Length: 96
Image (cartoon, rainbow, N blue to C red; front, side, top):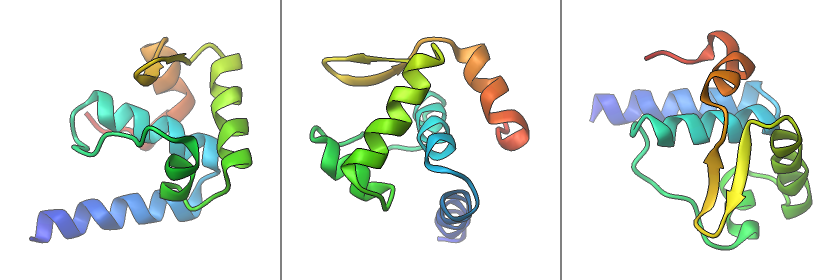
């Protein structure tokens, strides 16, 4: 139970302290590392709600990551295109 609390606190702090682009990238990285069991939603507005934002802001964040060449859109959702670039984008916020 304490581990779940620490994970929730880490996610909460990231969502409060960082911009939405960073949070989407961090979420994708956590999914890649299998540290976050929850998969994304199929509808973009639900995914945006998960980040506490509107669909429009979420789409802009995804577009910024796509334009930077870090992620790509597929039928299954977002996938990491450049893992090393994503790590550099996240900076010191990732712990392996």
